Length: 105
Image (cartoon, rainbow, N blue to C red):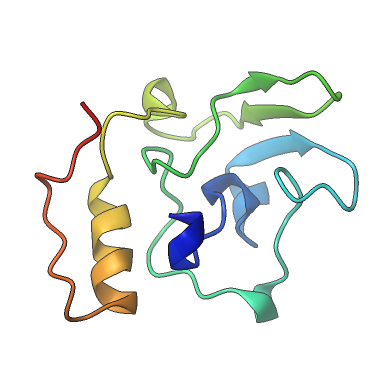
């Protein structure tokens, strides 16, 4: 998905409504993307294949869901594209016709 122009889901400009993220300011894997630099094709999606799992990482970064955030049990899944991933791909590449059958098995 990176090669297709997508950022990590936990880096979206509105992530602070859903997540607490501890990261260095210039951290490209955890830092928040500027709203002027990205188009969000749908709502925040914890099921996105582009979302890291909650927890802490070796360089001191941490991701935690805020209370009330839904579907946190699937955060960080790597099995398939989420429905919003598919919608975003089809919006960005209208002739691609990505379907749910696209799975990592």
